Image (cartoon, rainbow, N blue to C red):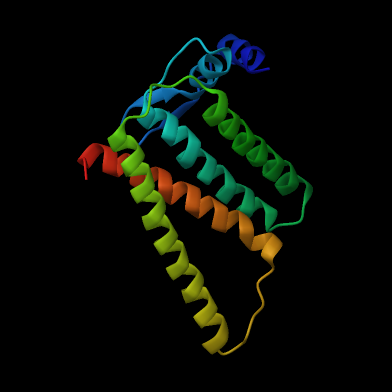
Length: 167
């Protein structure tokens, strides 16, 4: 399927570029195609960026489009869920370089920091809901994509930061 999409994009001379935190441009279609076909081995940072940053952004965009109830937003939310699904598959089955000890430590540190950040966000929302003028109830179905998305996105951004800085 991705190969067909790649051919179609080449025919109309359209390239999709995604800006990665390290200020390098990569062609997303080529990365996905290489990972699925298992021809290319990508770096650990690129792999974690796909796994966490792209996946988190897809979840957040899914949550935004899921807030509205019309046909276009429903289609967009399905597209972003498919993107999250594809990035999850890539992170599981994609060929990447071996994770070293520092990479594992950076991933663990970024997940721990992300948990702290999300607990603070959830407590802040709970306090606003309890002490605000109007008590409001949050619909879990509408909120969970944002919780998952922020956890994934923060983990990815912090991992890339820790890998660059070497903390």
